[in-house]
Image (cartoon, rainbow, N blue to C red; front, top):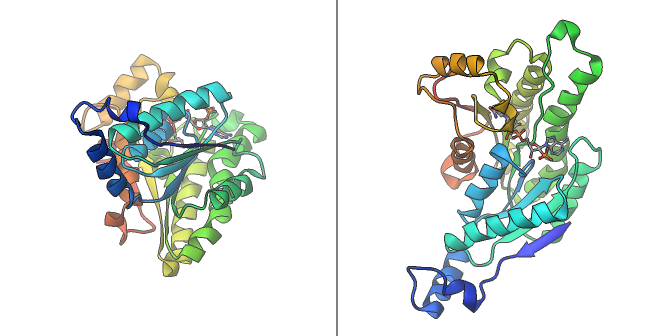
Length: 286
Ligand code: NAP
């Protein structure tokens, strides 16, 4: 586990362009920071949607526990970027914790829960974002190809919810946001494994929401449409044009579009929303 704490030193503070009085700036930010919204666990935060979620939450003062599978140098660079975003937004004392783990491993959930407990921070939320695709027509899909996607995209989130829910239950608060997909709602040729996993994640979301609502915990899903990340980068130009044609807003989504929806579902403003699937697809389905 790598742990970084962001504290301003004099040199950093005076770089803030619109603040001339260093002491005043530090005081202002200490006050801001007294109401930090707590720790959010984000899986698969190394790139794409997960990284956008981490950046957005850092800029809104959240403490973050991020999972990744990178070398330490890459993770350090990412932490520096997140710290800069928090600092730019005026948050002085944000905690960034990184846990290097593969979510297909049986002990991943327990290792993350241990890191949360050791942080001593209140657990505001969990974002199950990490996911993979292994596309192919169902008739030719091997059992391994099917199960690999189920393991990362469905079993992994289940195990992590199971590991972190006791902490949320004790607190009597917490928010879980599962990143599903429009493919989990409507299906997609060539993605039977992925669609099954993402549909399963919606079932998991709704069932958990019923199980933990009495403890003040909400569980929701976000179903992105086609978002420009590594996952969709390989789409042939013709297929991409055909998809854009079906999107009412006439463009593919950006990772930030999903991050904004996630932040809303994590916020107090969403406290009366649970067991729901928020489609963020530019109107793909209307
Ligand atoms: P991406 O760019 O391919 O990033 C996937 C992330 O998941 C990476 O951080 C990756 O880590 C991590 N990951 C994959 N397998 C893992 C494992 N076994 N253990 C730990 N981490 C693992 O994907 P994305 O487009 O940002 O997608 C993020 C989520 O949104 C996924 O759940 C995806 O299904 C969903 N989604 C995406 C779209 C879209 O159009 N992009 C649409 C609907 C839903 P590494 O960097 O270490 O590989």
